[in-house]
Length: 118
Image (tube, rainbow, N blue to C red; front, side):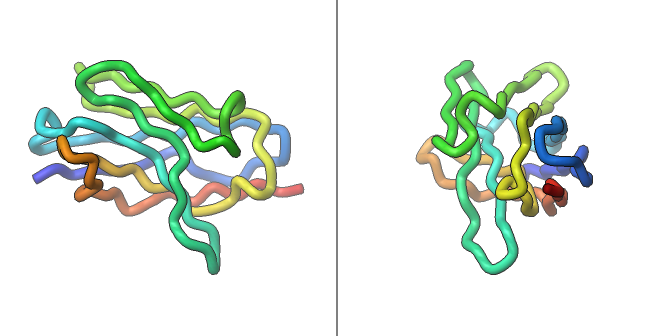
């Protein structure tokens, strides 16, 4: 089992920055990919960014490319999402997810709220 806990959400004005953190515990060494997803009220959960847990490859949703940066610290079992130039449409609950070797996200944190005011 893997436990994931997010932190760092909050209220920020448009154009501002925020950094989210995700702490992994348990069998974190079993993960292949970790990612950030977000869900706005009334909308489906959407992919934001992902990082290869055992390598360094990253991927981003087109909507956040150039503004968000995903990173990790394997020694600390931590993943981060540095968000800049935030827009009101970035508002939502941000969730940390962990995926197995098949890319299936089977582990989720409880989420952290990000609100961007205009």
